Image (cartoon, rainbow over all chains, first blue to last red; front, side, top):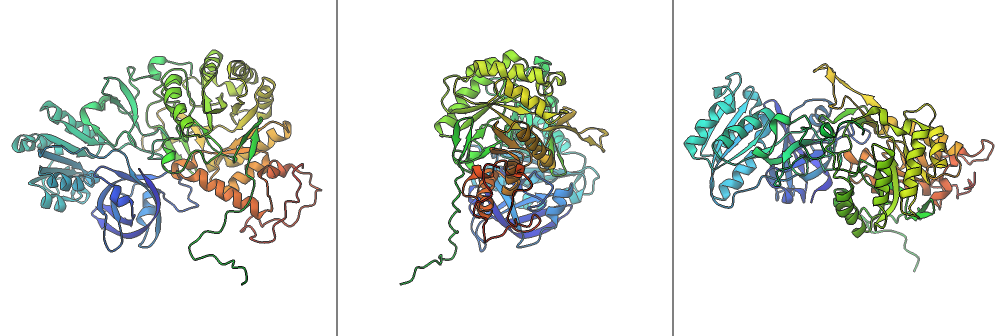
Length: 286
Length: 352
């Protein structure tokens, strides 16, 4: 059950091209599981920006000197995130969370490969710890455009049995995409499950590679959201249900974690004619 | 021992005493704050943040006869003090809505205002008929003005005759004793003409206003920002338009109940609508950024009314229309903080 709190900023640090912000959020920290996200109001009480900004939760400390804290990672994309990057310790932030459906953990100890693109690695790091605690083997593949857009590779190295890094420009690790190295990693580690978070094109490529090998794959998608709590219906994408029927589902409440092979990647950004109640099939009239 | 009036530290002051009840078309609600259609789904998500039975009512997202996917993404663009949406009325269809959503609201003891939307007069009549005998239903809001449906040519709300046909059909099919409100579009030359046509066709009240049709172009892709190209503009950016519409309709139709909405973010915003003539208000887009906004706006409205000396909400309705020669004590500085003492004692007169 999500909560809305006035959280105090504890710290804000630069991590390469990103910002990592820790806020004091007693109660929220205890409820958070890997894959959950939070939504932050930006611009202050008189802000002309009405919509919340949603970020995956990275680190959580349920207990500590400051009570529960949660940390999230963001990139400055526009006015809202620029405002957020200007916050300082002791500033107040209106935060709603934890939101969404977290990653599902395997019941048995299995070999898991975690694939992160850019700061999509943020929710995968607590996931890796949770998997390790269950006796799973964890291997990481992290990719980004350049070295400053990688996040968490040191943490990952500490937690995982192995880590492969790719960058588009070759500034760290192998030059190329995560999909270039993922097949070897999956084969070498005997992965039984794949988890991924990052840009949609990467999630699609990872899903395809895992599915070809019969490996189940959970992906945390990134769709633009207005509310984060399930009331605005803007963050939808076509997903096949257990009954085989495709619906436009809300990534904020039914996701952000989906089974990769249930997402109709070709049709993201469209309403396919066979979606339940498709307006392209129904045609005009309303 | 003298009377102790000090409160222990950390204890909130007692809530001011204002009778917040409001009556819409013969139905009395405990307070005048509602959610807005399309901004609260069917209440369940918001119930995680506040008790949805504590506000005046939950106006549900417009429901159609059949399940509907809505439009392609992107469906939303943030604009200065507002947002543009082209959801395309995504929903589960009336049967699933009645069995799941309305049943939940009834069990939760929330007052449900069910918004219906259709592609033809017949659709609306069928939807209204389906609501017969359904517990939990307080009112019906007829969405005749949604600008982001597939066929722009079918916006009933832009034509007085088409609007009247829909309202007449709904009134005929709707369960008796359930007020029918027509939700009006501001995208018309004279909103009072549509308002009058709806009231003459039997509307028990009016919801004022729906979104304004708008558009954003993405200067990076050099294409329209929304999948649906155009969308409905909402949020505080449209508030002055909404207040003007409420004012004009109250002037033209002094006795018709009005549910006012359009960019309400605070209790003082709500008070503007009330003074312009709204008998109740809906908090819409603000909920996306602040899920507890309806209860906060209600609390702020209570304080704002108490500070201005009102003991009854209904005494403030339409008060901005009072004749200019009516003596009014020095009011609060419109640009400053409201006075915290010396209330006016409710002497404005509720019959202005």
